[in-house]
Image 1 (tube, rainbow, N blue to C red):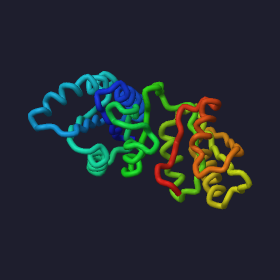
Image 2 (spheres, rainbow, N blue to C red):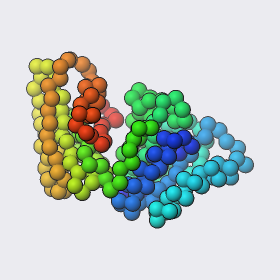
Image 3 (cartoon, rainbow, N blue to C red):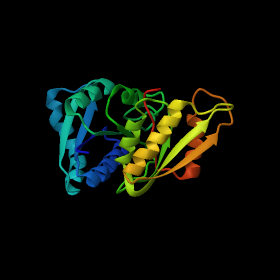
Image 4 (cartoon, one colour):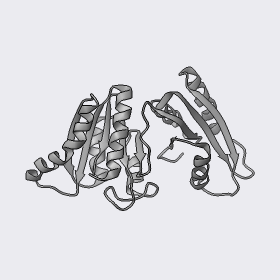
Length: 237
């Protein structure tokens, strides 16, 4: 990992995003690029925005890391897409925190739509996120039949601690059996993690209800399993 793009909107949640970016960058020796997107700004306002960004940049310097700053104006999704295309970061870190700053909750929101529009792996933090140093200890990997599923596993591997564990997880619909695509992704995940020396466990749970999605049930289990991070596919199978 060489470059982490961190969105800053001067809220407390973007401070969390910055600190987590720094922790990941220290693990990989990566550069941190700060991105601020204003709804609109005149060129003579750029110096003032840079001054407001300085405390964030200073934290990166104090961590012994290199940084750069990008300031642009426009809509969130389009501007992030433009920067990702030009910069090709390895990871985007962004905060979601209700109707302040970067405006909505994660699911069905501007942030989730942004994640769907860009090709870079994205780490989303919120106001309650705890900064994790040295990598996440337990990452939940909900299984999906997506043909690119292993890309998610590889991205999660970059964020796990050397002693961490991946939980390969599946909720089974009432009366359903695992199809070949799911089985193939489960076995490919186990093989990849074994080859890369990553500890893993496999956990399946029978769903108590039939539904199109299982995010609510999955989130209910997260607190019980003491999970640090959930890895999801932004684009459906």
